[in-house]
Amino acid sequence: MTLEYYGTNLDQAGHSFYILSENNFETNRDRFNEFPFNPEALPYADRKKEFKKGVVRFYNFAGFTILAISGSSADTRGGSKSVFFVQEDLTREVFESKLKAHPLVQKIIAKMPFDVLW
Image (cartoon, rainbow, N blue to C red):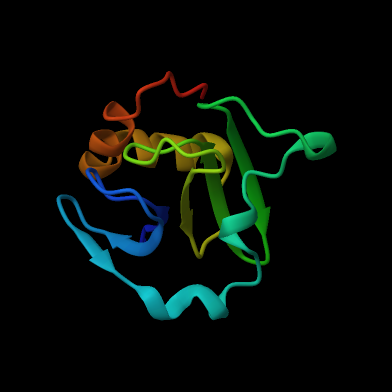
């Protein structure tokens, strides 16, 4: 399972694409045009309202499993997001458990200045 991430690293504002290893952010800028979804638009808000920080949305779309969190570990601007995804079809429960067990994902979430509403 290759875990990909659209968001910030642990200490800089500004979103980018990464492949997450256990302890490293590997920049992956070339992937944006390859996705059948727009990570920048996630999480989708109901009635064009911005989500409260920490809201989590889960999606299965075109062979991808996606978990999007409203907010970031390093960017306090409105519209910041943390989007984790794999190119596999997984249930929410399975994907959440994999994310919660991933050391770097846990560092990202621990640094968020709000509660993540799993």
